[in-house]
Amino acid sequence: MPLNFFDYLQNIGISHKEITVYIYLLSVEMALPMEIAKQTKLKRSTVYMILDLLKQKGLVREIQKGRRFSYVAEDPDRIKFLLEEMKLQTERSIQTLDDIMPQIKAVLRRAGEPPLIKFFEGDAAVQASLEDLVSNPRFKTDLDYGIFPIELVYKLFNSNKLRKFISSRITDNKHFKIIYTSEEGEIPTKLEHNQEAFRVDQNEYPFSCDISIFEDEVRIHMFGKTIYGILIKSAELANTLVSVFKLAGKGAQIQEQK
Image 1 (cartoon, rainbow, N blue to C red):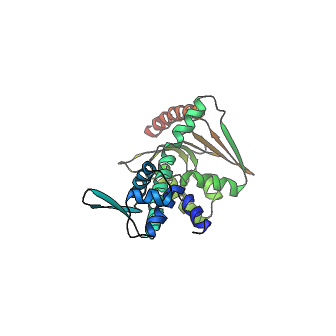
Image 2 (cartoon, rainbow, N blue to C red):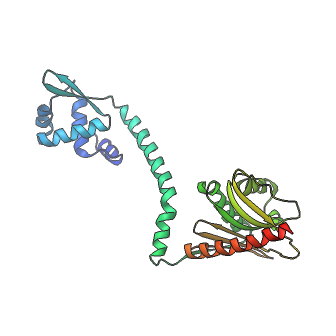
Image 3 (cartoon, helix red, strand yellow):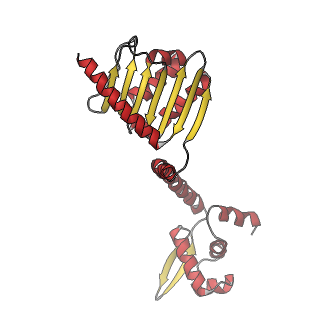
């Protein structure tokens, strides 16, 4: 059998001994473990272990004749189904990793890892930072805090990107607490979700930055003559700013009630 065939199967997680046994079974109608051991020059105990692994992968099946069990190789097309199963398992593993990654990173920082800091300069870089925030799958379900100067964000995005951004940042986000300025009217909130939006007078409380606090990330986007952004991954900073935000939110709520 060509060497590249063995290499390929090993690359997808089938061991050399498993390949040896499987290839032998493909060449015969069926075989007893003792026959497999003799022809492959593997120990009989090893052959039993390999057969169990191949059964789990769906590459061989067991046939009982009297008190003896013979083994038959499944069609090689089964390898394609095995790859599809591996792909699904990998996708599930990636999703699980995405879910637990913030916990892992938070533990590292609590253990003394310095905050991760990234800088952004220019419209495109800051747009990419904001889009990176709203594209996080957990952004729609987990709690987001923000200071949001709507007019300045309007200037940053073109109409198509703006609609997508507003939809992701506000409409599709089930849990947010925002303090914002706007000449365009109030941001609608859904009472069945954990959404709070406090509008403040932009003349009395002008905002020239967009600030987002999500999980252990703080993103600050500054809309001056040159647009800059900074991302700080620090659980300590995020937690402190959430406390400051809650205090400011109480003040905004009192102002709304006057």
